[in-house]
Amino acid sequence: MKTIKLVILGIALFIAGSVKAQVAVTVNLGLAPMWGPVGYSSARYYYLPDVEAYYDIPSSMFIYQSGGVWVHRTYLPARYSNYDLYHGYKVVMTDYHGTRPYYQHRDYKRKYAKGYHGPAQQNIGDRPGNGNYNGKPHYTDPQGKQRNQGHQQNKGNNSKNGKNQGGHDKGNGKRK
Image 1 (tube, rainbow, N blue to C red):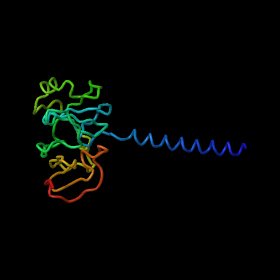
Image 2 (image 1 turned 90 degrees about the horizontal axis):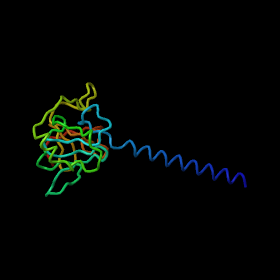
Image 3 (image 1 turned 30 degrees about the vertical axis):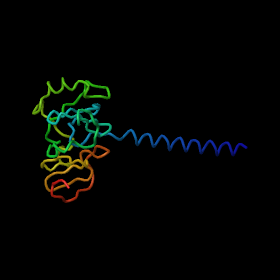
């Protein structure tokens, strides 16, 4: 009888350890994208003044107006297909902690108009020697793939994990 109890206890501990490991994996998702500015690990949102959109870091989603409604997408709208996320300015929303960053959109739009550039920013992907940024324009197509001139990166700016890692395919930089 004691042996059966010990076996059941061992199985329960094994299952509990497996569940804990799964939770740890979930916590690691939602890292800042490679085009995000360095030094803001606790931020949840960026405001992108040039495209009047927000980026939700944990969900790796852009938030913008479409047809008068705020939508969450893994890509920017087609009209911004040539927008360069690496060179565009990102306003880090360190003072907002809700779930609707667009709640004060009028204020952000007025304070950070299109073309706004505050203090210089270094992108996470611009770190010397990391090989992730080649200085050519990057943009996101409607399928959420990051592309640049003559070079496509499969896990680009807007992939589910929000990180720019992974394989490189040769491409012509044009939308398919």
